[in-house]
Image (cartoon, rainbow, N blue to C red):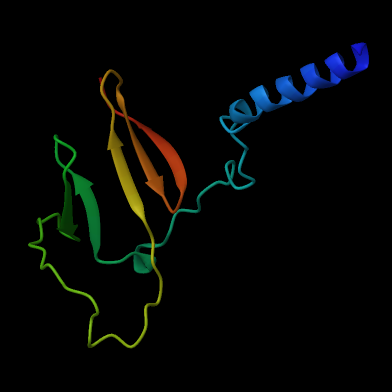
Length: 113
């Protein structure tokens, strides 16, 4: 009877710990990679910037804000998609940083005080 009670306790404890294990963060093998500075010729002729409210804006190479044109899918004049990257930006309250998620990897960007 004692063995059954111990077994029951072990199984119950294991099941109780299972949801907590989902909160654990696995270290990505690429977390400590240093990013090589690209050559100017390797950059696209625009950049994404954010205003004080966190709204993304697109600037040309001279810093002029570009007007964006909304498109509808499917895009008929495109033969195939060459690549797709996802960027999400989270503004958080109560801290001096922004979180940016690029292709599934989250980064913290410290803001000036």
